[in-house]
Length: 167
Ligand code: GNR
Ligand code: NI
Image (cartoon, rainbow, N blue to C red; front, side, top):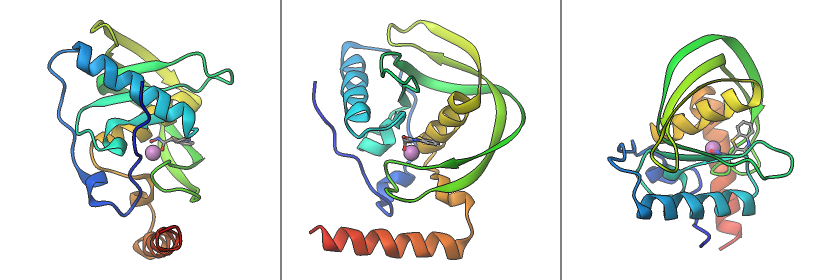
C-alpha cells in the first residue's frame, strides 16, 4: 500500500479526461487499494484516479461513519437520473473551499467492481452526490466549474497564494 499525491486546482492535469480500463487486472486492484488508503488518509469520502494523476476511469468511495464500507467503481456510468438536489460540496483537490452544487437526486449506476464483476445499483442522498462528483473528475470537471467565472477566479487566486506560502 502507498499514499498517492493529490493534485490541487489549478493543476491542468485535473482537466484530463480519463480512459476506460479494459480489464480489472492485479495492477488496477493495487491502484484501487492505494487510492482507498490515500482517501482515508486525506480524509475524504471519495477519490477519483484523475486526482492522483492516473488518467483511468477508477473511483473509490466510502461514505460510512466507521470507514469500513469501501465502494470500488471501474468505468462507472450513470444510466438513469431523476430529480434535483443541492448540497454544499468540498473537494480534496480544492482544499478549504465549499460551495453548493445542483445534482441529480437519484441515479442508477453501472460499473465494474474490484473483481471485474458488473455492478448495477440505485443511489441517492450523499452517495449519489459523491458518485456524480467523482465521475465529473474522470471527465476533467471540478465542482467549482459550476460556479461563476468571478467566483472561480477568486478561488484560484486564494489557492495559488496558499501554495506559494507553503513552498
Ligand atoms: O471528501 C469529500 N467530500 C465531499 C463532500 C460533498 C460532496 C462531495 C465530496 S467528495 C470529497 C472528496 C473528493 O474531492 N472527491 O473527489
Ligand atoms: Ni473532488
